[in-house]
Length: 321
Image 1 (tube, rainbow, N blue to C red):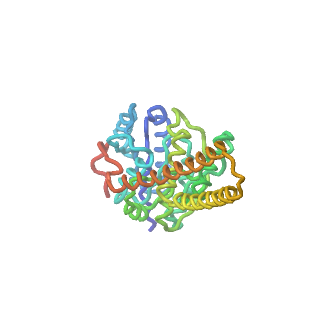
Image 2: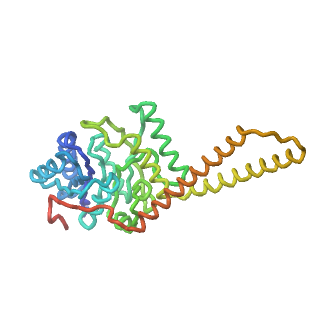
C-alpha cells in the first residue's frame, strides 16, 4: 500500500502584507489539489516564517491559521535575513514532515512545479531543485547580472545549481544531515549540494511578482553572492596568493631594471612613474587586506556560535506526528 508523504511548504515572509492575501489561497488550493490526487498526505501543511516583519504580515498569518488548519506560522524575534528564515522553517519541519518545499511568497515561482517535484521524490530523489527554464522576461541588465552571478559563484568554487534560487524539495533525511551544519554565515544554495544524496532538477517559467515590491535588490544579491563565495570557498585567498606572487615578480623585475639603469648612468628623476607604482601596489594591498579581513570577520562570527534564528511566536502549539 502506497503511503503518501506528509508535505510542509515553507514560505519565508518579510513585510508581505500586500502579496500574502493573493498568494496564500493559491498555496492552499495547491496543497488541497495534491492531497486529492493522493500525491501527499491530507494533513500536510503550509508554514509561513515571518522574518521580523514591520507591517501586518504576522497578523495576516495568524488570521489564516485561525481560518484553516492547513496554515501554520512561526515568527522570528527580529529580522535575520531570508536564508535564516528559510532555515528556521526547514528545521521546524524535522520530525513532523516527510518532505519540505521552500518557496517565496511573492507568486513568482510556479507552484505547479511542485507536482513534478513530488513525482521526482517518489522516484527516489532526496533533493529536487526548481530551476528557471529561461530569463526571457528579464531586462538585459537583470539577465546579465543574474547569469554573471551564478557563473562567478561556480568559478570561485561555490557549488550551486545554475539558475536555481531557494525553490526546492528536500526530504527529511537530507534535512537531518543539513542540521549538522553549524555555519552562522548561511548560503543554502551552496550548502544543500554539499549534503549530497540523489538529486535532480525540474524546470519552470518564473512570473512577475503578483503584488508588493521586491525586498531583494541588486545590492542584496551581490551581498549574498559574496557571502556564498567566502562561506564556501577559499579560492579568493588563493587568488590573492597568486596575485601577490605576480606583483612581487613584476616589482623585482622593475628593481633589476632600475639598478641596471643606475649602473649605466641613465637614471632620471621621475615622480610620475614612482607615484604610479606606489599607487598600484598600495591598491592591490588594500584589496587583499579587505578580502582577508572578510574571512577573519566570518571566523569571528563563527566562533561566537550565536543562534541562527530565534522563534518568538507560533500559531500552533502541537503539530507533531
